[in-house]
Amino acid sequence: MVNKEKKEKDQKDAGRENLREDAKDLHIKTKNFIGRLLDIREDTDRESTVAAVQKDISFKGHNAWILIFSIFVASIGLNVSSTAVVIGAMLISPLMGPIVGVGMAVAINDVDTLRRSLSNLGIMVSLSVLTATVYFFISPVKHETPEIIARTYPTILDVLVAIFGGLALIVAKTKKGTIASVILGVAIATALMPPLCTVGYGLANAKWDFALGALYLFSINAVFIALSTFVVSKLLGFPLVKYANSKRRKRTAQIASTIAIIVMIPSIILFVKLLRQQVFQSKANEFVEASIRYNGAEILKSTNDFKENTIDVYMIGELIPQGTIATWQEELNEIEVLKKVELIVHQGSEQNQDINELSSQVKSGILEDLYVKNQEAMENKDKRIQLLESELSKYRGDAFSFEELSKEAKINYENIEEIGYSNLITTNFQKTDTIPTFTVNWNDAVKKSDLALQQEKFASWMRLRLKLDTLAIKNVR
Picture (cartoon, one colour):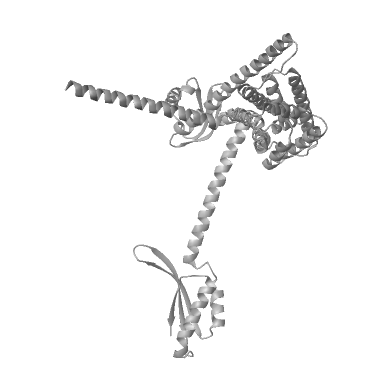
C-alpha cells in the first residue's frame, strides 16, 4: 500500500516537472519568436543612416527654394481651409532633416553635426515664418479658418503623434533601403509646416496669442521628434564619434548628455501636464452630459477651465434649486480628477446679467448652438409639413386640377357625359389605405361591344396621366 502511494506521488512529481519543462520551453520559443519578429538591429545600416541624416541637414540652393514654395502652398491651404493643400505642402517640405539631425548628433556626441543642425533649423524656421508673414500680410483673406485655429495650441494627441511619428521616421531611416512612404507619412502626421504658417498669420494680423500658440506647437513636435531619434539611436547602438583629444571627447559627451537632459525633463513635464489637462477636459464634459439634468431647464453652453479648476454651465428655463446644484457639486467631488473643481451654474433671474458677462467666444458659441438647433428644428418641421401636405392633397384632390383633367378626358373620350372624383378610405383591419376613385357616366352612343374597350383605355390613360399605381374607376351607363 505504501509502495503504491509512493509510486503515485512520484508520477505526480514527474508530471509537474514535465509541465514546468514544457512551460519553460514554450516561454523560450515565444521569446525567440518575438525577438526575431521585432529585432531591427541586424537590418540596421548605421553608417549609411548617419550619412543620410547629415545629408538631409544641408539647407541651401534647392532646399531653400523648396521650403519657400512649400510655405506658400501651406499658407494658401490654411487661408482657404483646404486640408488637401496643406497635406501637399507637408509632403514637399525639407524641415524634418535638421530636427532628426539634432537627435542623432546628441546620441552620437557629434558636436559639429549638432551645431550645423541647430543653425540650419534656426534659418529654416526664420525663413518659414518670414515667408508666411509676407503672404498673410498681402493676402486679402484675413479671417480665422478652422485649419488655422487647429494649429494654435498643442494637445496630448499632438505630443503622441510627434513621439510615435519620430520613432517611425528614425526606424525607417535606419533600415537598409530607406522606406520613403514611411518618411512621407511621418511628414504629414507630425505637421511641422502648418504651425509655422500660423505663426506668420499671427504676426501679420497682430494676433500674438495665435503666433505664440502655434510656435509652441511647432516646438513640441520638433522636440519630441528629436527626442525619439535620440532614444532609437541609443537603443540601436550607433557608434560615438571618436576624437583624437580624449578631453574633447569627454567634454563633448558631457555637453551632449546635458542637452539630452535639458530636452527630456521639460518634455516629460509638458507631456504629463497636457495629459492631465486632456483627462480633466474629458471628465468634465462627461460629467456635464451625464449629471447636469433638470426637468424644465436646458443647457445652453458649458465650458471648463483647467487652470482655474472650474466648470461653467449656462442654463435656460426653470430656476434650478440650490439643493440640486449642491447635489451636482457633491457628485463632481466624488470624481478623482475633478475633486477640487468648482461647479458654477448660470441661470434663473441672473441669466441676462450672466450672458452679458460672457466672453465673446462663449456668446458666439451659444448663438451658434441655438442657430444650429433652430435650423435642425426648422428643417424637421419643413419635412413634416411637406409630408402632411402631400398626404392632405390626396384627400383634397390637390395633387392635380380636376377641372383640367375633366376637360382632357372629354376631348379624348367624347362619349363621356359626366365625371365624378372622390377619395375612398378602405381598410382590411390591418392597414388603412386611401384610393382615388372616379365615377364615369357614358352616353348611349357607345355600342355595348365597344364599351368595355373604351373603359379599359380610359383607366389606362388615367393611371398614366396621374402617375398612380392604384385608383378605382366606376363606370355607369
